[in-house]
Structures are given as C-alpha cells and as structure tokens.
Figure 1 (cartoon, rainbow, N blue to C red):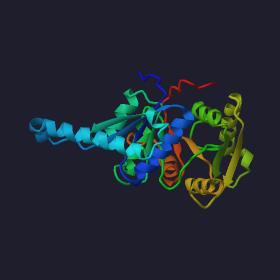
Figure 2 (cartoon, helix red, strand yellow):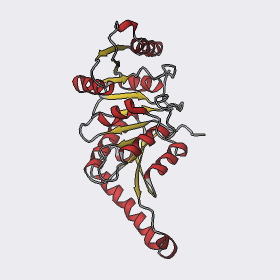
Figure 3 (cartoon, rainbow, N blue to C red):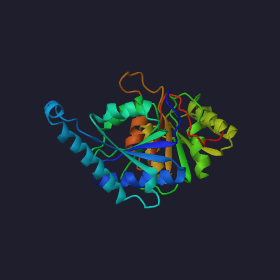
Figure 4 (cartoon, rainbow, N blue to C red):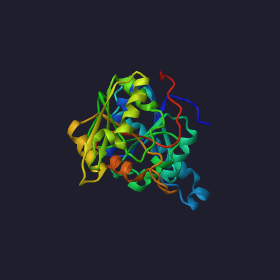
Length: 288
C-alpha cells in the first residue's frame, strides 16, 4: 500500500527541456511545500559489464548522479535546492516510473512531454498516464507557469462524473484559484438539455460542496473534434493548469486514456494534471 509522503517525483532529461522541467518543479515545490525527488534514468549496463566490469558500471552511475546534482544547481534557486533529492536508476524508463509510482511514496509525478532528449515517447507517456498509481503532471517547454490563478477542467461526455474532484479541490484551495469546467458539444441541441451540460453541472455541484466556486462553459462546435475545440479555448483564455480525468474512456487493455485525453495532454502548452481510474490518497496537508 502506498504511504502518504508529500513528495513529488520529477524525471529530468539533460539539456534545454531539463532546464524548463527543473524550473517548473521548483515552482511547485515552493508553492506546495513538497519535497522533490529528481530522477535520471540511464541505460542498463550490458551483461558483460555487469559480470566483468562492475566497477565501471558503478562509476557510470556515480557520474550520472554527480551530473544531475550539478545540472540542478545551475537552475534551482539556492534557497530551494535543499528540498531536492537525487536518484539515478538504470533500465527502461516506463517500467521504472511505473514501479516508482506504486512503491515510491510520491503524491504525483512531473514528466516532460516534448519528446526531446531522454523524454518518454508519446505512446509511452500515454501508457504511463494510464497505468500509474499516482497522478501525472505533464509539462511542455513552450510555456512556463509561475502562478496558478485559473484552473481548467475539460469534461468529455464519455467520462463518468462520480469520482470526487479531490485534486481540483486541493489545487484550488492551495492557490486560491478559480475553476472553469469546459465541455465541447457537437450536437445541435439546446445546451441545457445536453449530457455535456449535465455532467459539467454535476462537477460544479461537487466542487461547491467543498467550498470551491466554479463556472461552466459549453462550447458548441459541430464540425471539429472536441479536443481541438478545447485546445483552441485553452489558447484563448490561457489558464495556468489543466486537471483532467482519464478513466473509463477506452476499453483497450494497453491504452486506457483515450483519444480525447491524449490529445489534450499532447496539445497543451501549460501543465496538464491527469488523474486516472485509481483513487489517490491525498497530500498530508489536504483539507476537505
């Protein structure tokens, strides 16, 4: 059973994307008061190296840890870096991250998504989001978030509205942020008779019960894909954080987040916080 820790896991690739990810991790560390574990995942040593060149393999791991520390020190403010811890693992990224999500004691994970350097490939990121035992926050190097004043919650009519929006409540209270619940309607019917409206209003009511004020926006568009409509809306209003639920969108055993969520994740320039079908324990300072 995963224990509550108030920790964040952040996978740090080298290079420009790693710089951006470190800056975002530093912001969330400072504003949420959590500890951040920075991970670098290197290739596994060959069979021969593991058997005959153990010292060399260990040296490579030690050097990777030193490089990660040096890299972080060039980006993270001096008054913040004491809240960062460093880990180097060897092997394939996706299995390692999934194992850490289950047993590592982290509240959520921060992952770069622009496919550069050591980042996960898009299909690997979708699998991580689907299978992770903790929420995944994906960040892009195209836009930096230094405050969270407006949170957007996209709703697909295929999603259930039964799961409580605990993470939305947590972030809204932490940042004193306003929430907009948005859904795209492709049918030419009255808005208030639509399933999209009813689902959004249910979420609004659930948030209201937790003392969170929110508004509902239904975007009527019959010609384009719903995720494209949502992404255009995001570009227009420029929220600071997107929170989206992934469960019950696809029956595929291999990929369960569905086309709608996948396109929102990969199309957004701002951080997207994805919560899958697993019920997550909340951070230790969560207040109902």
